Image 1 (cartoon, one colour):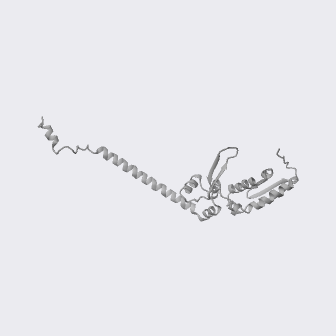
Image 2 (cartoon, rainbow, N blue to C red; image 1 turned 30 degrees about the horizontal axis):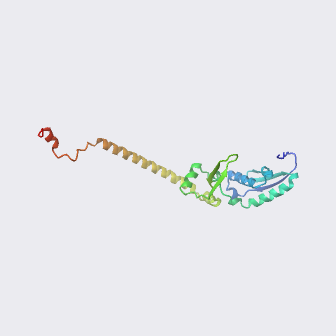
Image 3 (tube, rainbow, N blue to C red; image 1 turned 90 degrees about the horizontal axis):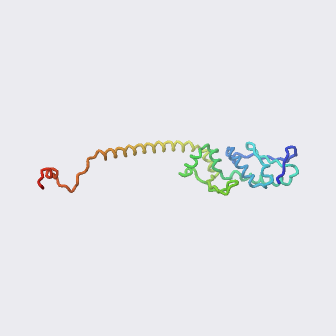
Length: 205
């Protein structure tokens, strides 16, 4: 049975501030780091770790001092590597302020390099999902490089060009269809010149 923690019980507390290199300025990324840390803590104290903005706080009842010390030491150790934690799809969309459609398009055409593939099981389900993750350093370079606007301008130009080509092709197709309908039926190539007059005069009857 899980322990019921009362707000009146004295608690042991410790806080950590997530660095910009870890969050990349994203609240979604900060929440993802919280979930990553919780998953690596003992089950008994997972929900004792929470976040407000970029500040993580571990709050454990005083009578769980040993759990507090173990969890605190583990969190401090894990935070040393959070700036290299792979960036998830929702996180990169929030960091770069891009849509899901843009992320998928740029991933498919190679502009957005994949940092690997992760497979996870959905909570409470047998189904697994597989998705691409991204390297934090690459995401940071994209964020600071201003290339997202360039990619969007390129996509707008490419879309306009595709529409122009499609319109031209449709016009050409209609022209060819009209020309085919207006063309007179071809005379049998096996018939001799002047055959129609010869046949009309009844010279073979």
